[in-house]
Length: 146
Image 1 (cartoon, rainbow, N blue to C red):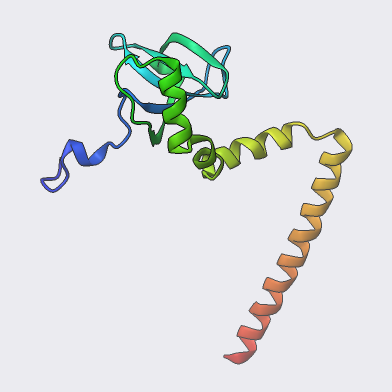
Image 2 (cartoon, rainbow, N blue to C red):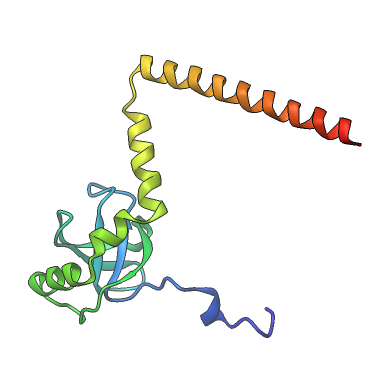
């Protein structure tokens, strides 16, 4: 490991009380939650006061940690977690992330009908034709300039 890089500098998303996480697996897949308590090395107690996740233990492997941390104390009740969630404006911050936008785009694409997918394919072909034509024109102009 390089001397200038310490392990503390390499990792920024730690499993910690107050860390906001995205549930990637299980019945609550696709929801945000907050780590309220660390049970052991593999499980944490999570609560999603505004996302519909009830307080329950969940395995860490099912979670994707986000950059957001809510200032709560260990084992805080749902009322306090909800207040901290609103004060930190977690929903608003999450909606502005690239991660959320990619997930929404994936959902929109999955909801397309067969005809809409066909229209999208045709639009992409037309766009690529225009781009290819313009690149060829620019290459010819560059060759003439030499």
